[in-house]
Length: 105
Image 1 (cartoon, rainbow, N blue to C red):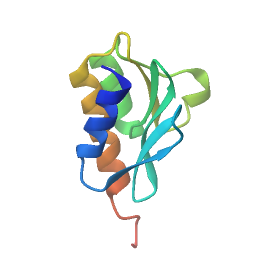
Image 2: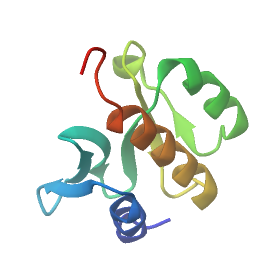
Image 3: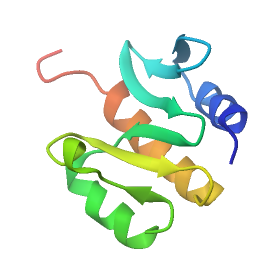
């Protein structure tokens, strides 16, 4: 999957807008991060902690969690190895999590 394909897919989701810079674009819904290109071959995707482990088990070639992200709702997706369907699944999880109203909101 290419960064351009990631952008097209993210922007196809309702309410998602591109922000960031030319070299590090990011896609947000309601000003909440969904996915960001960290470098030309690595994405950072917000993923609910309660669904992250299952995602990693289903797609070990696509995702990883470096030590700096262990406590956060994030995974890295490795575009050189990631399956398109796996990246889309993670982006969908992020979009679902980030588009929800906050408690009491």
